[in-house]
Length: 226
Image (tube, rainbow, N blue to C red; front, top):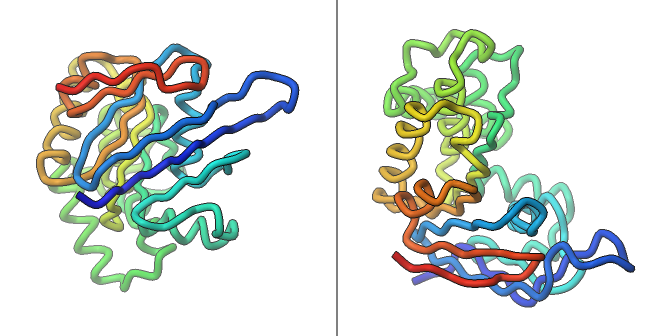
């Protein structure tokens, strides 16, 4: 199985005199695999996610995503790489309030240079699949939390990335909506989407992924395979 994520001896320090945010972390995730990262607040989960997304760089060690080492890429090349290879879902959606649902979803394709007709077809497919096609012309402020998260998922999938990163995707929605988001993530994984999920929700982790990695004080502590 091809690795979609490979971290080797990754350490990240924000303060030379303080403890490392991540300390000598090694992690491999295969293509089409779904893995959850769990740990207490301040354990290094967000740092790990940012390094994999290319939003931050390690102090030492190497990070590779979809077969590309991120260390040798410039900031411009990293941004281009993210658009093609990584979809990101955030706890608080990160939608642009002055754009419609459709335009939010189309944004990655426009930035990536996808032809307009092809991008529109893909966006319509995703909005239909996620059950929010009727809201294409609405603005995020007029949607419920669950609907906004579905828009965020559609946007993350727009460029068919080999890797989907989800940071507490059910953290800002009610339990019923959280159930729907769980089902969507599970369906995406069953269809072969590689997923790295950061969550405090053990139920979500166990339902949506085949492996749980626990991180404590910047170090991988234990793994649990379903």
